[in-house]
Length: 367
Ligand SMILES: [Zn+2]
Ligand SMILES: [Zn+2]
Image 1 (tube, protein in one colour):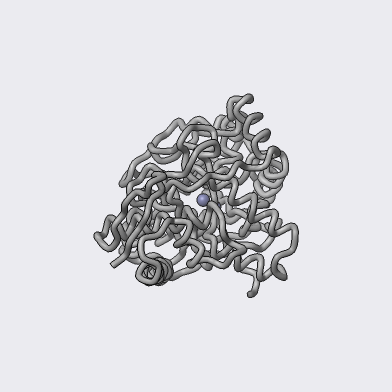
Image 2 (spheres, rainbow, N blue to C red; image 1 turned 90 degrees about the vertical axis):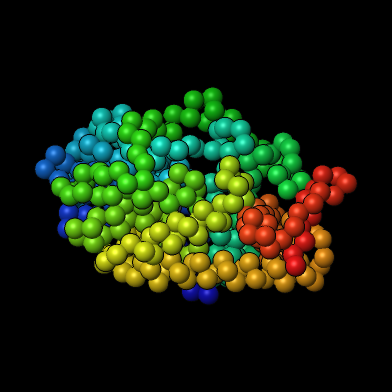
């Protein structure tokens, strides 16, 4: 499979993608992704930036470099908008707040998971897309397998106990545990303090124009998109990406995260008159409605498959469902989390039943 555009390495060149809007690619090393787009929205006072990449010096260097190409200095950044609580989107925000005095804007439910109990999932792309990337890389080489394993451990937060569906939660490698312990010790200094909490329908003044905040829970519960009706521009974050499907976790506080995601897809598909979609990964594209519907279709097909598996297996665990749904190389906690999200959606829609086995493990039955 060809390399997806979201996997391309960050380029140094910046590009104008709308009136007063520059796309700046920042490097990231995450399974399934090669760069994150920071957008700079220019106005008389300087610039607001959306999603300033990962924490750490490599990203910071890239931010300074990209701003310089636009004749901007760090201190010209007066606002940082964070589309959602994943580290590759808010990573540079704390330092921009410190060094430029920038105001940090995010949805009022913003919460970064890994440092808190019962936190949700920070994985970015779906299990299928991770598998596709490994195929694209030549399949099963040690480095990408390691990447996939890392994504799985990152995906699973309830490390010491069991998952909500009663499966065993694998302990992440010591290296990862030490990293999080260190992050906790330093007070999570890379997590920004949000000084402007926004809600659905709020208006932000960016690039000298009005942008409407759209709350689009699904990929995370705190995800927002920004719509500029004047120039017909839509900043999509990770909600709608050009060629990959965002990971939808079963490990959130929402009773039916897939349903939230569908509602958010319907919401953006109904946004009239969008000409330019600016995603957080990959290139700008134009057909928001078509892409949102394609992502929904992918999940509808997955739901049909899950129902079929249930009919063949009878009452079964999440693990059993996930092992029928995915290729063995993808088995593990992240595949189970996605399977759980789909089974819970069927349950809430009255298309599946759930019972608990003798050991408390959930059993699902589809009609
Ligand atoms: Zn994300
Ligand atoms: Zn992302």
